[in-house]
Image (cartoon, rainbow, N blue to C red):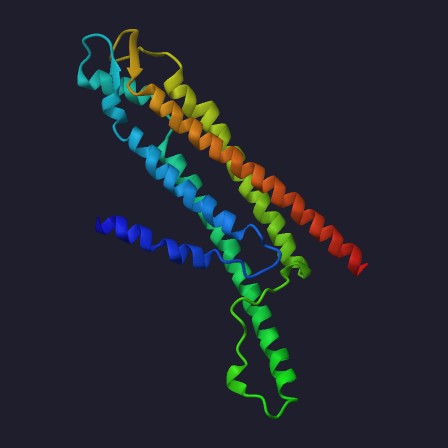
Length: 239
């Protein structure tokens, strides 16, 4: 109960963090939601794979040593490790981008306050204590070329991460449980037919991650094209 209360108490914090301080980065709440969704999905689907060692069984009178060797020969590539690394890379790139956005917003805030003070200094009856920047003030960061270029790199990086992750899921992880397993090693002469219990649940977990990866790729392409269009429009105006 305490854990549930603690989890839901984070919702207002996430909503406050995802508040968009710009009129350009309109997808900020979306990317916060996707990051939170990815972490939640990985946390849920990993429970299906926790007992993978116990779920791996072979027909025949095999010793534990032979069964372990068959397991190691079949699962030669990491599963959890790849999911965690991709999740860490996806989240890290996002929060690095958020850091640069916050720095740009901070810079715009200082400029706004300076201009605000200069305007207020004309009126001698104005109160200096009320010269704070409005919390809902919107900044036009789309005028900054370096930030737009950074957005292009950001979306391209996220797209590359998801393309690699999708390829790993389809070409490496899915065949681990979909294809027939035959074990024949130097220690255990066979071949022995082996199976992984809970195949359908494990396949659904991989399909779920692959679907989420495709959705993220689509959003990356959309925002990438949108950023290019904004950048080209700005270049034409400055020309």
